[in-house]
Length: 173
Image (spheres, rainbow, N blue to C red):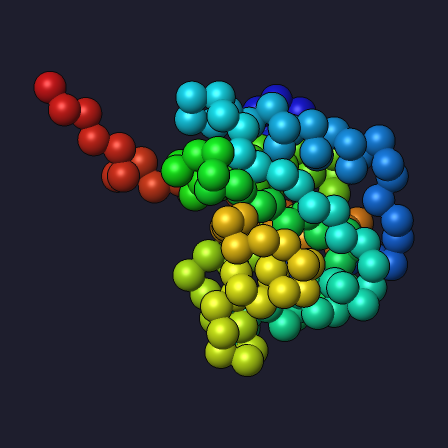
């Protein structure tokens, strides 16, 4: 697939088959995250791979809504950024998540970004604090999101290039 085709095919997939993701596909997804550009090349992001069902179940409670499907994912990648390394952790984490999301599509792996930053858990605490407790990570690590991964339960329809909103583009002259 070329890059535009991957972008058109990328969808948020929340329903997965009970199948293992091949290690070589997971490695390519992680390589995409590691290749993501960061401000001043500081590389503050680390990628925590979660595949234990009991931990995925706990992470599925990390938000008041829209995270339940994590319990059925084959794996999840929690992107944590070290604030002692860079103050652009939101941007750097977001780019890494987007790169991995696109690579998952290219590898025919379903993925969905679970927003953690600025969200509340089922217990009404900060979703970031909740995830830090579940994973036992220090407070100076910030968490923008989690990428759920799995073999898609069914094929998803790609977007169509003719459906993009070209009215959002403005030339300033």
